[in-house]
Image (cartoon, rainbow, N blue to C red; front, side, top):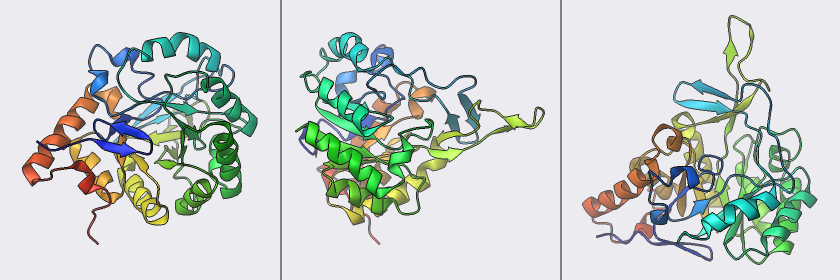
Length: 303
């Protein structure tokens, strides 16, 4: 039987599968369907310094091979997160990565400073890539200097691993990745959603209240694979790859492209047990192909 254990920075994962932020909460809603302790790691929804209400009106739209969302990083804030979510997560035997969001550099730091008092937290995913907020988010992630400023400030606030979550909505994602690593990022997480729009032809208005949103699901997998591979060739840090992963074949493609671990996102909405299907499928494929250790696959793409 293949060894699925992998090392993601300071984290030891039972297998290379986690969940994409914003699609799984902290796992509470999936606990009836999924053995959460089988996950390689658990990644939280975005957490901000103060409560965010999220965007008004229609925030979800189905598209061919994917979905658009414009949730706007709705969350109750870091104090409520610590009081209400962390006690539940503490019972699990799985590395816990918290996705950190902010409108300003100072807000990112405030979240980390508060979470530093919590032993349940193992690492941070610094979200500089959300397209659904007017300030912060993707604003930081599209400029290497702004991205570096956020990562450098977060790096000073913690000794825990920090992963920069990057947007695909840039000309050169490798340039942003290099800036983040130079600023102290321990790894890169990508991709976040691709900017998109849906239109109601009868009302002649955008379906989403905000006009545009983030496209996720199988439609973006080719984009994600290309960007993960580009970043793998540009920096020498672990990569969490995501974007359209719904089966083991998808996950293995990301590993071959250079990802150390993979995150299942939109597939969780379609099939709550998607993560388990991916884990089981990776193990079966490795056994069939004579792969003794899943780490043999990382960056093993032949070109």
